[in-house]
Every structure is written in structure tokens, then in C-alpha cells.
Amino acid sequence: MLNWSGLSSSRTIPTSSVRFGLCHVGGGTNCVVDGDTFWFNGERVRVADIDAPETHPPRCPAEADLGNRATERLHELLNAGPFTVHAASWRDQDRYGRKLRVVERDGRSLGSQLVSEGLARPWTGSRQPWC
Image (cartoon, rainbow, N blue to C red):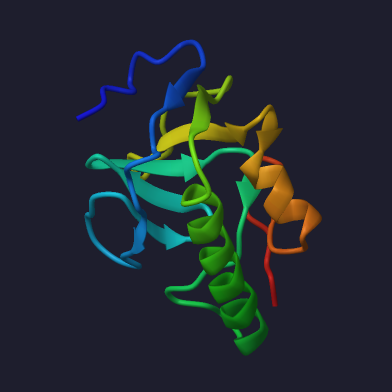
């Protein structure tokens, strides 16, 4: 299991032999919960630089659709090869105990890729409604 609590510099995660599934709820190993949360080696990670629509529970049909699309896309991106994680500069974890991490591949944030594809928004410090 990775100990990310002390992560102060970037770290490349060797995911070439890891496949991420979908887990949506509860704990998991190497699976995507939603568009901004995933589990890796037993650690729950929140993609720190974005806000993705909720999927459980969504607050309206439009949020449910966009949230499901964001979840599927994050799943694809994590399975596309090795990535690098950087600890968020403002704090190590959120109030739900998720590790706050910026996730990058080849120097590009996977979160900003989701934003550019219209599946998430940049994180501004608080959640905004999607409906």
C-alpha cells in the first residue's frame, strides 16, 4: 500500500500492469468511484483540481448524465498508462479522508483534460450546483 500522507513531491505511479475498474461506492482497490474520486492500492484519492458532477446521488437528470460521462472518462484516462500525482498545495486530504492529489500524464493534468472536455469544472474551493 502506498503511504501518500507524506507525499511532498511528484511521484510517478507505475500503472502499466494495473487496470482500474468501476466501484461507485465503498472501498476498493484500483477502481473509479466517480468523475473526481478513485481508489488506488487501498487509498481513496480525490482529483484535487476539479469538481465533477455527483453521481450518487445526482440532484437532477442532467447532473446524472454528465456525472456518468465524467466517471467513464476518468476510468479511461487512468487506464491509459502511467501517471504522476502531486500533493495539493492547500492540504493533504479533504473532510471525507480522501487524499487530495493533482493527477498528471506527460505534464498535463487529467483534471484539466476533463474540464476541457466539458465533464468537470476547475476547483474553486467550494462545490457549485450542476442543476
